[in-house]
Length: 82
Image (cartoon, rainbow, N blue to C red; front, side):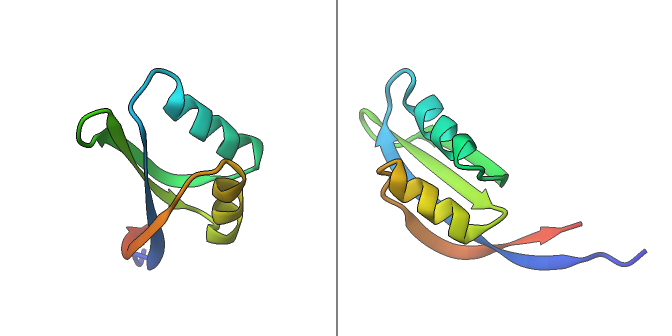
């Protein structure tokens, strides 16, 4: 069986590193119907956290992030294999 490899979009956002903030962001994305292929987050400087997203559908993700007042940065693409 042949591998399928495709380029996917990769976005990041910086948020306050406080209890419940990540859940707020992920809940807003879920409620907007966003499907994530990958997500990870980590502490980034004093009082900040960095969230990394690889959405299944970039247009839906960007619209939902804007609605949640999340400032996104688009990064270089990533590869996904199946």
